[in-house]
Every structure is written in structure tokens, then in C-alpha cells.
Length: 253
Image (cartoon, rainbow, N blue to C red; front, side, top):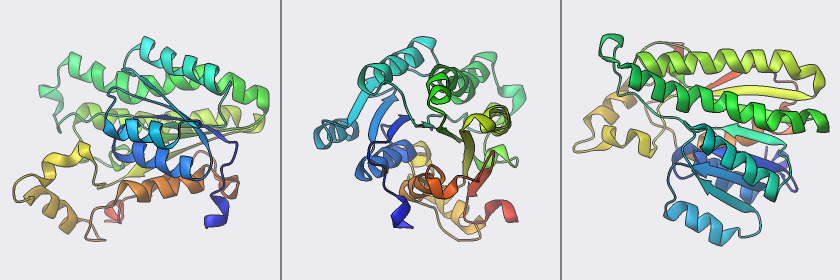
């Protein structure tokens, strides 16, 4: 499969790049030769390391994707450094602490939806026109097993991830004939900073999740990044509107 992982001269946009899956995606695409424009709400040592390691091919802007200003800053960075992008990875997202609907405030609902879903809508609409001009583009949205089954989050998170899958299907249907391809990835238990509480203390929750997963383990962010490399490649050119689970068999139960 490595032969497909040549992204020389490809222009990639990634959200949520400071940690977890977004960071692993950036590392994978940069190593494969891509130019990357990325954003996150925080700028940390991982971002600084990428800037030092790839000074000519990695560009970063700090911003909150729940706000229009944060989205526009990333789009402006793309215009300034790359002109356009071939591949858009909408990876940023937040959890809702498994909060059920009666305990979900409107403020929490709006925060989750603005970050997880509206950011995808806004950024896609800013970058898609150039993809259409070029006659080619790939959009990969980060869903979740919570977009396929209940139990992966609370009311807001689960609803937002289901909506991402629907948006991805419609995006692909509307623009596939014009050279655009949209897919979603649905991770299960991935060992990222978002899930650090599961590993605190005696890691009881992490062990329980692993025991309930048919594969009996958590996945690494790199495994999701490797799947992204494939889905964004020409080898996956006939995969349209699909949501690909990477969950150790969780939803097969």
C-alpha cells in the first residue's frame, strides 16, 4: 500500500492538528511530501516541532473553529501559502462528556455543533470553489462510531456525528460529477488526548473499553492517519460518500 502514499506537490488542509488524529494526519502527509496548512485552538510543542521539521511545507494558524473568524483565518492562510487545496481533512472536534439531553444546555449543544459540524460546513464552502475550478478535490470528514450507533457520546456529540455522515453523503452526491470526492472516517476507541481521562489512575475505563472491543485494544492515531492516506489517494478514487469505520469491530456487535 505504500506506493499510494506519495503526496508530492499535494496541498492539504487539516483542522485539529495540535494533537491526536489531526497531528498524526499532519505527520503522515508531510512525510509523504505534501504541503500542509493547518489550524487548532491551541499552539503547543507538537505544532512547533512540525514547524521546525517542515519549515517550507507546514503552515499553521491558531484559532477556534467554532467561530467564523477562526475558519476565515485558516482559509486566508491557505490562499496566502498554497493558493488552493487538493485535500481537505475536517478533523477537529470536541466531546460532550456523554451528557444526556435533559442535562445538555443550549450553550453546550451550540458549542458541540459549531465545532464539530458547522466548522465543516463553513470551511468546505470556503475551499470547495477552488477545488471545482481545478476539477478535482477530496474532502474527508471525521465522524465517529457515535455517528453510526448510540453510546459513543452524549446527545449533542452523537447528533453532531450523525449529521457529519449525512452532510458527507450529500456533499459527494452534489459534486461527484464535477471531480469532488467526499468520505467520512468513523473511529472507535483511539488513544488520543481527548480520551486521556479513560487512562487516568488505574485506567479502569480504558480497560473496560478494550474488553468490550472485539479487537481487545485501543487503536493509535497513526492507524487513523494511515487510513486517511489511503482514502485521500487515487487508489480510493471510486470510494464515494462512504463512512469507513476504524473501530476494532465495535459496531459489528
